[in-house]
Length: 346
Length: 270
Image 1: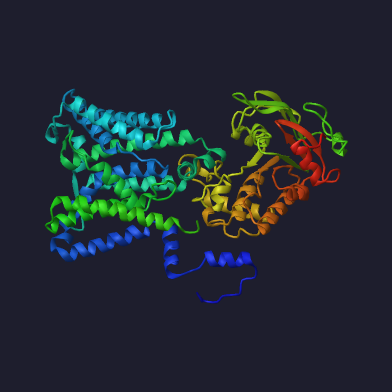
Image 2: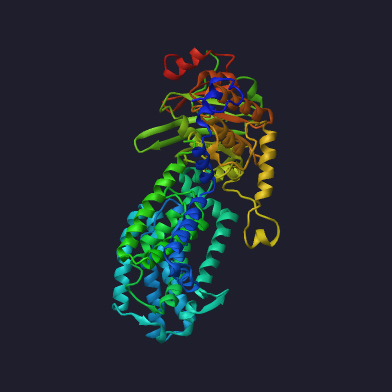
């Protein structure tokens, strides 16, 4: 009741503002999180690393850390595409399916048709872009909710993948070297990194710069924030949405390339858990499912958290199912925190 | 209440304004939505340096009228002249490019973006040199500087920090951002749709002050409002819509608020 007495409020209006703006420690934390949404995932990541490090000596072992980064490379890449789409208040349930389809096209065209690696990767990129264009077309022209669109295209792309590949895995040894190049490793300070991890980090830098520094980036946020306001401000909402789905498609093709390097194979059955994990990474990273709020850096932290949890729990000797359980808990906690943060001043 | 009679499409309203050329003129605008007639041959003139209020009951066609003036709707029939030159707006951007800026009722601001980003939303300025031309990097510093100057020039003192996200602002401050965005960039006409509808007394007064500032800077304002005291406070002339038509154009001097309401509801034939 009797909080710190600053200057006495002069009018009823001031009094009301004073009341709404009360700075309890909790609301101050909330304001900080509101302004810097990447703070909470950063804290979670540090805590998780400390706890898992204490639970098992092997966790902080360079070889294990290297493994975590490799495991994160694919999810982390898909999560960039997912971030772009969620920033526009959409969601993409087909990211994993598009990536697998693209990777199968890369692998099959090079092995069965004997195309050179560059051409195979280019065709994979075309497939990624086409899938993005298809999703984008349905969202912008038919005005269907992204959830429904990508729920449908998820099944379509999975079926196309199996039809096209005949359900067969292509081994990396059969492919041109360029296709598995993302799996090559190099050593920094005793920790092995793959080219794929490097590519993923590069992707984060590029997308963060584009989102933060270009008009297009601002328009992505504006469209997700309030599409009507964006339209009235003179932004072509459909064009922005379409470009986001196309960009996501290209990023998913890059993810396909990284995935081939990571597993040294292209399997039509890979990536089942990647849809959910990519959404989890984005949401844990502080990007709002309601659009217009979030950063790719938060997503990187989110992807690392998912990777650390999966790895740490398996090192702790728990059943694989507990990893899935933990990811589920993480999503719910992250969305609850997001809701709480959004309560700042209406 | 006897003077201002001009049926749809007739000569402009009487008074001293007659001799001047209107900056914006609409002739016999018609707009139908299916079987609903939104506008039934409405004409309107806006002269330099004036605040023209548009009032009318719900469904009288106020919103449709300004939508047609600002490119948000395309009229079925009728003509629009800006500076006596015919114009055809297909999208809000067209009207905007021609110098007609609109502040919408639902406050078309992006809550998560900051004040400066909102002022420049949809027309971001890029950095000079290769960073801007090839990498399309926006000039954040320059835009913030310009935003500060613009707010100062408009006499908006309630917005000190242009880096604050708009969602952290009060309703009046948001309205100020929206109005500032409309008034910046050398616009010829500013259209305000119910700018005080959601505001308290103090904030409403600030917005009315802002409207006077705009007019004093030579920018004519079209104001749509339900609030008669506000209308009679700032308007130079008042265009009354009724049943999709212009019932009359009056001035605060020639008519009282009661007269205006009577014309609006049809109790009084102007």
